[in-house]
Length: 502
Image (cartoon, rainbow, N blue to C red; front, side):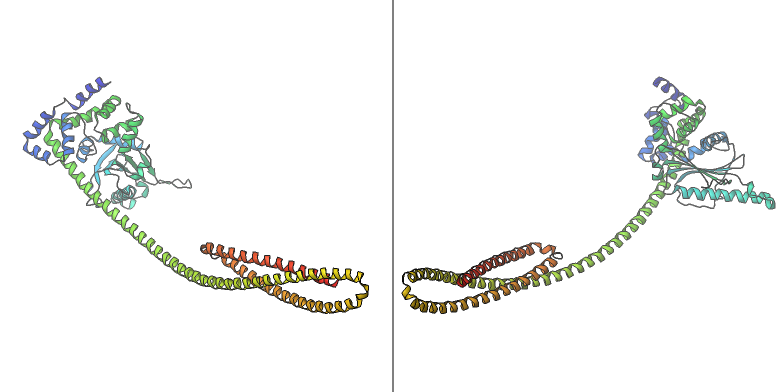
């Protein structure tokens, strides 16, 4: 297969030349050499390789496309290509000039813009764009509307009062893009997009505008990946012919469709006439440079607008954040004020608790003293009990001394009554202390309730509150212990009274 490829290409593109031979031909003509020197290095190399015969020429260059697809000289070529794009046989009647366009663009990104009329009266606008541009749909809509108005005015002028809107024919807008935009890259497996007006209800009306977008870069990438050695149909052959200058693609086209040889031979002519080729190449590149500059300007303007919009959005966001921060700062200040107030309350409570603790300590000291007194009384009562036992023994033994002992007992009874009165007073005092302790307990419970309510709003003071809670628990424990001690003491007093009464 490689041998056939080498045999076919020279037969179509002519005999191969060396780089030196090509350079000698270019230098031999001062005007050609001057034009060559003005090319950028990358395009100089492309031109040299074309003249050497190791690559073809892409038809995306305006001058070469118009030369190969000249509607006056070779109408059948453009007719065949457009028939395959639109999907039905069409024949070009003539090419229409662009001078009557209503749309004027000083810095267009269009490499080629060609308008033709078919024998059916239908019109087609063929565009080749170096870049997919930002909004190809809007541009295509304007061009289609312009063609429709041209057709309307022409038919109106010809038919006069007999004009009918049904006399208007279809308008086709075909856009080939060498480098497609982001919209088309969302469909990496589709290289031709056909569009027409439709109604969502199924209503059928003869609306006259149809659009065809062909991203050549996606076509070349997709088809090379899917079918590396074959071409499936004639439309693919046309797109390879227009969009690629690679020998491998030329070989695929000629292998399946030998009739393309005539057009490749027309291109071959320029290999042997570098002075004509360099002028056409230079003109095409000048258009591309102007378009590229316009594209870069448009891109920069778009980016500036986007950045300006983003900056405005960021500014609005910053303002919103500033307002939010101010609100947060105000809330924090309020919280700080509340915390300070609560801290003051805690300090007051702490002071009160310390005072209560001091009082409790004093009461504890008093209770200890009372306990000591009660123990002494208990010791005395035990001694009295011993004495009574001795007296009972003595009374039994000495019945004669009963009266004397009775007198003595009366005296002792009087003393016991006095002591009983003192014990009652002590019991009354203990009851008063118990009442005071209950009041203190109630106050402590109220404080504990307040502390629990404040605990829900003072999460950040949790550690401090825990310490306070521990202190309160200690006080409650001591208080419980005191109550237990008082209860035990009361039992002992009641027991003594009971023993005395007995």
